[in-house]
Image: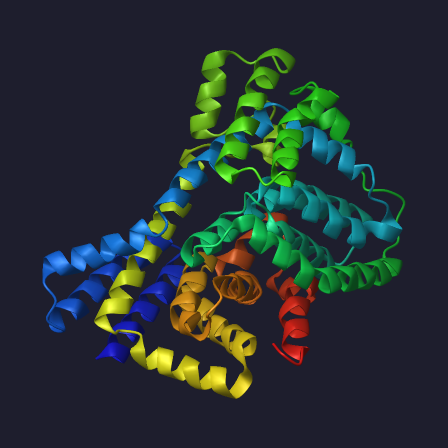
Length: 427
C-alpha cells in the first residue's frame, strides 16, 4: 500500500506541473493521502493531527523569517538599494568577461538577497538582456545566471533554503555557511575559470542598456541607498541572529525610503505588505517585487511539506525507501548516498523545499553529527533540484531570463559541487 500512496502523490505533483497549477494543491492532496494511509494503519484523527503539527512545529520559526525576508526585499527595492547595486554592477560587464561577470554579479546579489528567484528577476534579467544585445548564445548566458543565483541561494544567511536546512537539522546557520564555503571554494574557482575561458567566444562592443537612465526617473541613486545592505553584511559578519540582522536592515531602510526616495509613509507600508512597484514601467519590469504577500506561497509550501515529516516518521510510510537509502549508504558512502537519494526526491517533489525535506527524512539516520547532515543536504538536494528540468527551482529562473532549459547543462557551478564532493576519497 505504501507504494500506491507514494505513486498517487507523485502523480499529483506531475499533474500539477503539467496543468500549471499551484504546487499547494498537490501538496494538500498529499497531506490528505497520508492521513488516509495513517487511518488505515490504525491511527486516530487526533493522533494524525498531532503528527502533522509536530512536523510544522520544526519550522515555525522560519515562517516568521520568511515574512521578514519579504519586507526586507521590498524595502531594499523601494530604498533604491537593489537599483543602485544593479546599476553600478552592470558597468563592469564587457563582452570578453560577460559570462564570468554574469556569474559573479548574480553570485553577489543572491548572497545579499538570499533568493534565486529575486536575483534572476533583477540581475539575471539585466544580464540576459545584455547577452542578447551582444549576441551571446542564450544557453551560455542562462547557465552562468543559474550558477550565480544558486550560489547565494545555497549559502546566504538570508536564504530560505539555507534557513530551512538549519531549522530541520537544528544547526546554526553561520556554522553551516562556514562549512559550505569550504566545499564551494574549488567549484567556485573552477566555475570562474570555465566561464572566463568561454568568454573568449563572446564578441561585441557593448551591452546597449543604459540602466542609469532607466532608474533615474524612479530613484535617487545615491550611495546612502546601500545602507540597508551594509547593515546586514556587517551584522552577518559578527554572526548576529539572522532575524535580528534582517530587522535592523529593515529599520535602516525606512529612513532611506522616506528621506532619500521621498516616499510617503503609507506607500512604504504598502510596499512592505504587497511588494514594491515603481511607477515607470521600464523600471518596474526590472526591480518590482518583495513584500509579505510574496512570501505567503513559499511559506505555505514549507508549512505543508514539513507537516509530512511527523506522518512519515510515525506511520512508517517511508520505511521501505529508508531501507533502500541505508543500502546505498553502505555501498557508496554517506555523501554519495545522500546525493543519489536527492535526485529522485527532487524528481518527485518538483520543488527544492520538499526535495530537501524528503532527502533529510530518508538519510538522517546515517548521520551522528547534525552539521554533517546539514552540509550534505546543501551539497545535494539544495543544488540538484534546480538541475531537474521540470523542477520549479531551475525552470522558473530560466523562464524569467528567457533562457532554454538546455542551459541547465551549462550551470557549471551546480554540477561541480556534487561531482567534486563525490570524487573525494571520504565522501
